[in-house]
Amino acid sequence: MVHTPPELARHVAAAADERLRACGILGGLSDPATLVVDPACGAGAFVAAALGVCAGRASKPAAVWACDRDRQAVAVARRVAGPELGAAGWQTTWIHADTLGVDPEPVAGGHRVVAVIGNPPWSTAAAGQAVVAPAFQPMLDDFRRLPDGQPLRERKLGVLSDRYVSFMRWAFAVAACAKHVGVVALVTNGSFVDGPVHRAMRAAMEGWSCSLEIVDLGGNALLSRAGKRDDNVFGVRPSVAITLAVCGPRAGQRPTTYRRLWGTRADKWAALGTWAAGDREGSSTVTPRAPAYAFVPVSGRAHRYAEHVPLSDLFPFHREGVQTNRDAAVVASERGALLARLRAFVAGTADAALDAARTPSRHYDPERARTAVATALSRDPDGRLGISVLPIAYRRADSRVFCPVTPFCHRPRPRLLAAMAHSEFALVSVRKDRGDRPWQHIAAVRVVADSSFLSNRSSCRTRVFPVCDPHGRDNLDPVPAAAIARVAGRPVSAADVARYAISVLSAPAYQARFDGFLRTDYARVPMPEDRERFWALVDAAEQVLAGDACTGSTSRFDELLDPTWLR
Picture 1 (cartoon, rainbow, N blue to C red):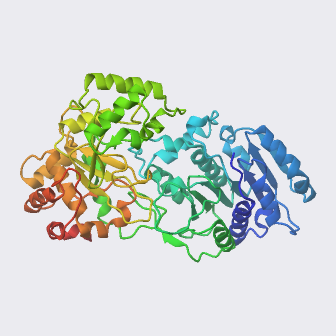
Picture 2 (cartoon, helix red, strand yellow):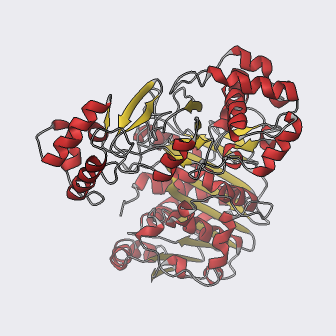
Picture 3 (tube, rainbow, N blue to C red):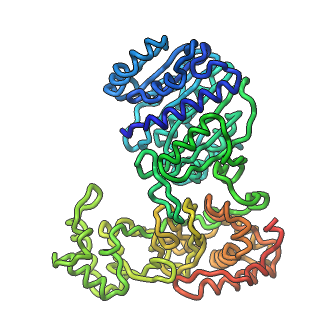
């Protein structure tokens, strides 16, 4: 359990109170029409904050509903906050239960005004989740469908099962039951603000809200930084965000806004104080639209970009690059050095580079790794068969070798290795970039790429799109292939289309025009509209393919682009 700082709870409660009063609910959180709901009350920080915000007022809320599945936390909240709530006349119901197992509609109870405030659990579904209430279960699918009703085309939907995501949906369900005004004011993990898999969640939240404010408190320990200080208000690794949504027939329509806070924790408390009071200075108006439905402001217009085809649709087989985890042991500059290190690992010879590989953890057994490496060396003692040693595009302009043996290498990606064995080259990109340093989103490699090939931060993992799949077949979706062939005048291969994509995505004009969109999801490639231009772009890609791990872009790419793509 990570306790909510009192300052944060007070600012969120004050913001919910101010927005209610702006909707004509004169008593705000303490209005006789208001039901205050904390779905994960813990030790009572938000309920206490709500009482503090309303101190001195003659009115009191209709009721307070506070729930948590931690029996001890509920007992503490009742003992610590209960007496003051009772003295103020706030009728509070403390419940020991998993909120997700509670039907949202009865909680709202027909109240005219509902305010859902709190800091729900951030744990993943793998950490254990109780049975979801039958009436609530179908609502969870709302974050897995796009506004047109189409399901999300994602292989990994696990992040949508994180508990804070489910609590967000539950909170909106309760707020929607309010007869006049519903408010959702939650502090959560900030990954939903710009995560590609969360795009249907963002679209739904914006669609349900008459007013939606996102305050991004930042603090993500995994991001690249350009010198700005960015303290985490909790002291945890993930970023933190506040969602403040107002919905209902009495709620006035306002544009969606996004505000990013930087600096020390004290700086952020100061900025939150003005925001809670209704000051929107520093907030940007955003219009979440396809394809990303982004809450973060995106430079440029999505007019033509939304029509382009994502790399993931062009090349169906793709994988994240190799994840070594113990680079000092697993990666070397040349084959002989790595083979010597592998033999030392098997023999138990002292070598500082192997310290991490000899340290057990919950996910790593050194003895199992030693046995696997010994087996690989017995089959491939010279590292020439690709069993014990393989080349890797480690970083841009930095090719090395690695040991593709699991668990010594954390994730060697055997299917990707099989695909690369058949492929002349692969296009590499990143699905998104959350950092604020200059970045490169496209490159080409002739050997498998490391997951950090295009970044040294795990938030910007390299994705590899080989021109062949693991069985040696052309890695090209037949639908766009047919459309491109009609323009090209003859059938096209995955290598042709990959070369075309490399040239387009490397063009400075294209990168400048769509920079904001290129940071939010898989890069999108425009369909060619001219035969000669298509084949010229295919030929131009040789500038990028000139080396094993070469990246680059030239003004010639700009000259070959169709200007209609840049409108």
